[in-house]
Image (cartoon, rainbow, N blue to C red; front, side, top):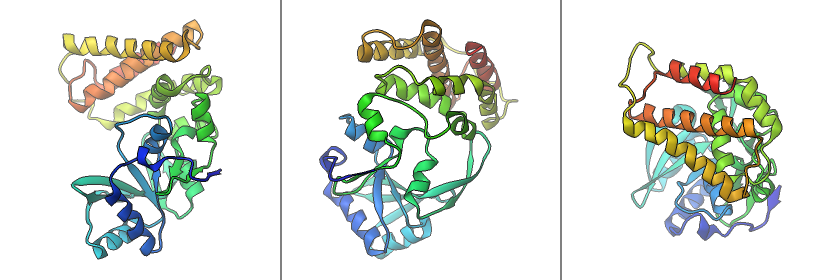
Length: 287
């Protein structure tokens, strides 16, 4: 769905130099668009988000185009199609359009494509598959804008299939529902989360399970409680009363609190549990 000048581009960025990159890509025969969270948050009236962009140029073509125009690039994740472009000391992440050819529940093997719809179809939620150009035109392939306005958080296509591609999407679903949800939680999505709870154990494969980490400190335990409280307050603020049934309400709170806190603690290597134990705990919460 194309929405002509739907988005006030100043809500995305106030830096006019960023738009030079659009000209650079166009000069090289490509198209550049803002994508995902930045577009979603701008439409929702939020501030303070990072800019992500997508292009139908391959990573090599993008680097060549930037070099010809004197723009510095950083190979952030060439294997996965992401190039960092430096503008005014700000690194903009630009990712080439992709399609998945193989997934294992956490990582995907991708090939590059020039098909925007194909790139959108591999994303998790409809509200995250919205693109915008430098003129504020919005390209919405799965009615994500309508869902965002109505407070509906749902997966693209089959919820079960999306989750099987990356089990981390279970946590992302609860996270985005706590932020943007207004309607009752999507029943099919919630059921798919429950049916695929075994996949949470696969997340433990990302780390060496033989490495034990420090036990959870008092402050870190507070983080779990604070996260649970934040989700509860967020849902109540947006709904007045929880839109979840009592049992599902507890699942959402505990699942999000333990899951997201666990992922945060993993980043600083301070968790009370190794990933396998954390997955087991989340498994019990959904049982």
